Length: 397
Ligand code: GDP
Ligand code: MN
Image 1 (cartoon, helix red, strand yellow):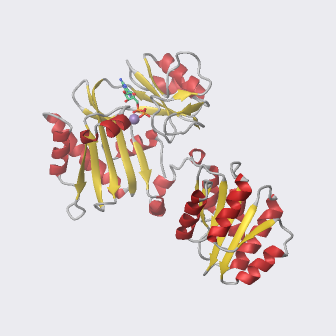
Image 2 (cartoon, rainbow, N blue to C red; image 1 turned 45 degrees about the horizontal axis):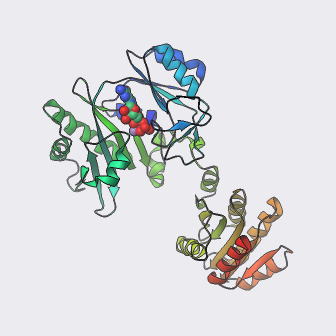
Image 3 (tube, rainbow, N blue to C red; image 1 turned 30 degrees about the vertical axis):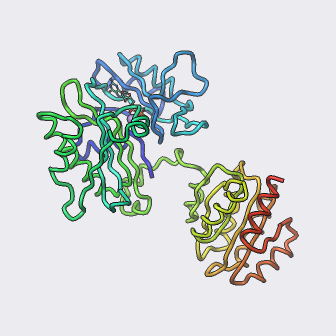
């Protein structure tokens, strides 16, 4: 689960990390009052969406010469104006995809004077099974370009979980970032704080880009992107409360309510499968025969008819879906339950695209019989290969 920049900064502030003072604005009328609570001479007005690259992004239907999703203002009035201009509009960045994201919240921050922009991240490195710090002297809006063309400028340091964070980690990072004098001490302290928040709050990803040296020579967190482990949210209720459902895929949100493992993808073939391995294999074979999956969906082992019905409804609600492949290997999951769920869903929402059903395993005969007697226009398939070929043919002709 991701949170907004202003929420991440509030969390950092609680842990004692250096961040600027700021106010979140939800309604245009509040903008001026909120901005006037901050000291000038510079204000930064920042669109809050769960995607990076805002500074270099652009708004849909933008007027000539308009700036991106991060704007500098020289007065309270100007800051309020910029906030009003951005609220409610759609911001497109290289991370949002062409559809962009609607901006419903603005963060106004007391502006900082910048000496240098650095890059810093913490992540769970699956290769070493450790938490790693990743850093670079080349922070700012071109970090992707740095990673692509000069990867040697990005360094990483892993932390042994047996010792946890130690000051020498911070000194190494400070050295790698070219910090000097009192900045080294600030870095040792800030890295300790970041490691603490990362581990205590069950985070998966923490990115600060840029981490800056201010014109006064101090370290400061200028941007913050945090991702949390969804499986640990039950023990982080205050983090779970920060969830902004408007930022999430509505189909994925619906699926999570029914405990379905669902990920929306860009293709045209909707898949309903049981078991993560079979779901992966189904996606692969759809690609093999020349089409793209519209989703990953594992209905799970002991799914009920209701759960299957919901899963089917989520698939059909996706406008990109031009055909559906139901691929079930009945083990704990019974084929007749799947068949009943599919039929119940079709009765409720209708079926406007071709449907291929491949059932195998427990109660397969009963399942096939239910489908055959349903009067539905279903294409039956014998095995995975047959099913994939049939659905691709039905969709692509
Ligand atoms: P992102 O584009 O979504 O990553 O948004 P950031 O919060 O990283 O802001 C983009 C850029 O705006 C930064 O790299 C800075 O160059 C600039 N910026 C952000 N805040 C300030 C500020 O307080 N003062 C100044 N001078 N520039 C800022
Ligand atoms: Mn940034």
